[in-house]
Length: 260
Image 1 (tube, rainbow, N blue to C red):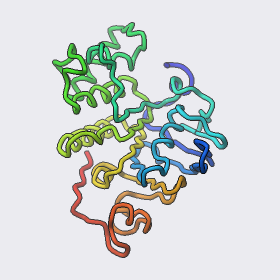
Image 2 (image 1 turned 120 degrees about the horizontal axis):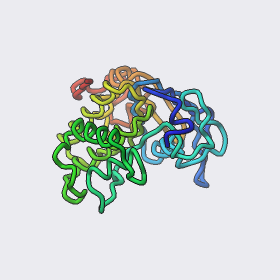
Image 3 (image 1 turned 90 degrees about the vertical axis):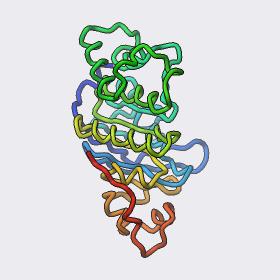
Image 4 (image 1 turned 180 degrees about the vertical axis):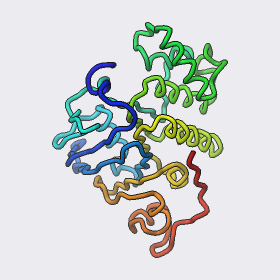
C-alpha cells in the first residue's frame, strides 16, 4: 500500500473523471467532471443518480466501461483500490467486531497489524485527534455510533492519503453528533489539506462544510460550482427543486455554516 500511485502523492490531489461511463445493465451513468484540489466537495442528487457509484469509481471498487479516472494527473482506471491514493469512509464504518479500537485503526497502517513504533505513535496521535484517547482497548460494540465513525476517521488519518471519500458516513447519527463529525472532518481537512468528496442528501451538511457542489441528476453531472452560489439562488433549478426551494427564490440563508 506504500507503493504505486499512492506513494507518489502528498496533500490534496486533483480528481478527474474523464468521460467515464458505467452501467449496472440499465441506462448508463456518464461522469465528466473535475474536483478541485484540496477542497471539500459535496456530491448531491436524487436517489439513483449515481452518487455512490461515482465514489466507487474513484476508489476502484467499480471499473469504468469507458473513459478514465485520473488522480493527481495519473490514470488509475486499471489500478486496484489498495494502490490508489484514496481513503474511504462508509455509512457502515467497516470495523472488525473482534478487534479493538487500536487494532481497527492500525489496519490503516498494516493489514497484518505488524506495527512499528512509528505506526503505534501515528495511531495514538490519530486517536487523540479524534477524541478517542483512553478507548484504545474497547471493542466496536462498546462504542456509540458516533465513536465508531471516529474510529473509521482515525483509520483514515493514519493512512494519510491525499483523497478522502465519504459515502454518507454520518447519515445514521442524530443532528448534534452529525454536526460534531462534520466539524471534525473540516478541522482535519484544514490541517491535512486533502481533497474531500462527500456524498450527502442533507443540504445543511453541504452548506456547513462544503466549498464546492457537484449535483448529479439522471446519471449525469447536471451542475458544478461553489457551494455559496448554490445556496444563494444561483444554483440550477433542478437543485432548488431537489432541496425543496421554489424557483426564483434564494435557498434559506439560515442553514448553519461552519468552516474550521
